[in-house]
Length: 628
Image (cartoon, rainbow, N blue to C red; front, side):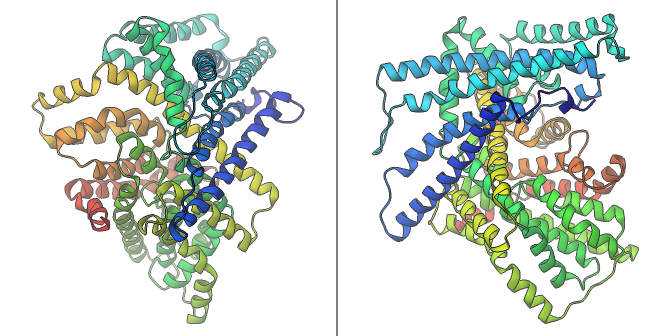
């Protein structure tokens, strides 16, 4: 049974769904207006020497409303990320029972955030609190966004629970599902309740946080709500009362009004518009005509296309989808080995390493590191990996002889360059605005949105419906990341209160392990987590604990940020969760095992790149030092 079959019918004729969709669309339009305002602010400040007094204040106000207006529609479409790698292997009826349990637990966090968010709103209204800065507005306008989004989210979760019960009622007599046997159900319920109970019982110890978090995550609860619930439970235990829960809306507000994180929805919106503007075909046409004469030249062109797309879109999975659709058939038609082709389109996208990278934005926020420095630190390692992938493709084609060299005239090459000139200016246009001082990294995200709209207009690939879809999709994807960060930061508060990073640092340093041994354990930890969790979740879950240890290990924070993104790129290629693998699987008609075998050489190259940056951190650090 498909998961969507048991969810409530969406959109048409349902008031709650229509309101949720309208909220998500409104959020997208609001973010589009932020892009326009911030681009104007950047231009006015740099070229007219007339900075505005209102753009920053209005943008952060819009940002928090954008976040909480988009949450309900994400629940409607079941887009909030969950670690369901184990749950999907269970019989359908068992999944629905576990779904009810995780939905109820999600409700606990949603209700707590909504109730205390409403109290926060009443307090701001009662004391007539005002925002800081030259342009001021009542703070209740900010805090009202939290209960507004949580109320509609509450109703969406209730509808999901009712739909699950309805499905179980309809299938209780006809289902031959093994889980319909009551002893099996009782055992599963006992395992869930016991594991949660163990986590709660030991919560006064650090082990309790780990147990509770892992239980909630691996039983399929949405990651944002699971981490938030762990933090909520920890606050109750630490304070011994509900008084600690007053921090829930404060953490949510501080996260969803942070100027650095505002770059996430801006880069996401710009990347989505670009990905649907036909630029993939243009870049592939350019790279194939200039490199087709090489042994494996079209494969090398595919790698370079992935690198250029990564420098514009910032999403590894989106780049993989575009490259697969654009390059797969031409490569096979030219006689390239199918396994090499699948490995190339799956493994050569580097959206998390080559800037602008949403992963770097999140990491920079969590570690208080310059996002601009992180962007520049990813440039040389990204180019290095593209070159290493290309060398492997050339050698592989030369040895196997399975390729067809394609030559083009200079007229054709120059024509493709002229046609794609505006596209290849994109990375320089966006990153150049940061390092010439014209824009901050967040304002560069706004510039990317304007640039992407210009490209969409030039190539005429997006109509009104397509733009609306981009606005809605960007709202859902961005809010998914921000909600995970809110949940993780609530949990991080508890981790800090329990002094877990300090205790962990002391334990590691007194263990007698050599530095290389500790680093090896950290790498293994990330590779294991990458088998079950997505990259964003891994980052927000581990960085607050790992980052304080880095100085004691002699590891530069910026270099480790690059290494972390490389590890996450590797995780995108490893089962059972590897998103890039499943992206390609959804496009090509090949067994999953065949795709996994195809990406093994690219995983090995990524691991070699990680080792090189560990041994020679100046690979990542040289360019940021030169920019300063």
